[in-house]
Length: 83
Image (tube, rainbow, N blue to C red):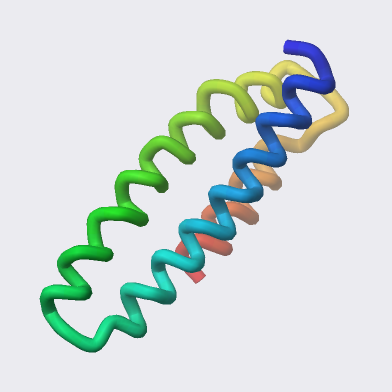
């Protein structure tokens, strides 16, 4: 992958972070059971696709780089997710 295409992928993943956060907030704010059920599957589906892209493309591109501490990055990401 070229640097430009990798950067485009990173930008799309950042956008997905925003959408996942918005969907999660919408689920928290839902007023009825039906609303919650309608919203509930959306973040999970998007997150699955998002995580797959990160694993296949971003992590795969960073893994062979000696100048990147991937273990630290992944540890920080796990900490952020488990909060």
